[in-house]
Length: 354
Ligand SMILES: Cc1cc2nc3c(=O)[nH]c(=O)nc-3n(C[C@H](O)[C@H](O)[C@H](O)COP(=O)(O)O)c2cc1C
Image (cartoon, rainbow, N blue to C red; front, side, top):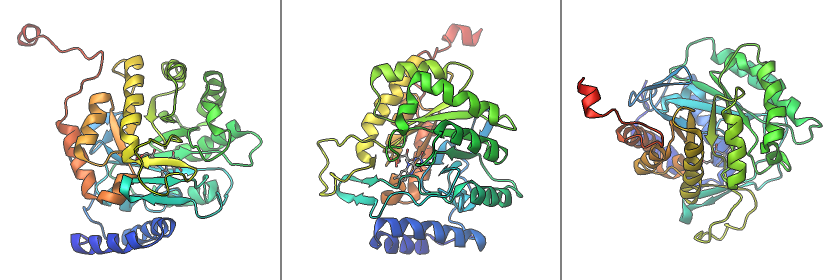
């Protein structure tokens, strides 16, 4: 059954008046409720610019980024907003509360959010129950499961392998997230040597083979990009997600809350994350799938990600400020855009006509 545009707008207005973490919690609850009642805004993913990536069929190239549905509670409802794929998580092995509140801040003047949730997660047991129930019926698009590590873990690499062992059967693709700025020391796992040690056991732990993607930070030096690209070209990874929130604070930020600690997402992230995406595409050539994420707030932004080399895109903060109409706009613009990936070879007219 369709939820009317009007009631969706009313909910969005009410949610916008709540403090940001409460608004997040209520959004998930409302979507979960709508899902239980069989209500949805669009009835399912927009069928726009469908494509086959990672051996999976994407009804459209725009996905919900990790961090909204951390515990896999509103997956069907997210497809009902029009997304072509949904990524849940980050999920960590043992339930943990995350950082003290307040830990999410809206920066409306900048179209941005700062969060320092710190992997609040209901843990693997809970996720496994939810995903088991969810998978009893087919989903209308691919489901990604994003894995994290417990803050108090003595062996973070083992946490990712545990997540892969338990959750691969429910996933269409898995993501190793080593780029959250809110778990101290986590991002050191992005070093090339650390990555090999991390990813091998994750691959080996999967009871069923699933595409494995690495989600990286946008705050990478060229030498880090070289190292990660070298690993991505090896046998351990099937793709990259570029990228997570940034610890940088562009001088252009106007909001009084810009000094809060945590990861910045939304509009100010568009240019820097797209530059890093482009740098990865230049090093990797045209074939390895890269999911472009960071700051998409319009169709033009989605098209710019594609021009920089994105195979698919994801968004989160743009949904807060622009609402679900952004999903269709992004899918349309991405679909209409031309691939300008370095290494793409145009087939000469003469060869084509021959
Ligand atoms: C409140 C919040 C929570 C997030 N939590 C996660 C998370 O648990 N795991 C993860 O990989 N990314 C997480 N992210 C990062 C997003 O997936 C995305 O990479 C980032 O926000 C940039 O995209 P955007 O500008 O479209 O929001 C979170 C982002 C926000 C705003």
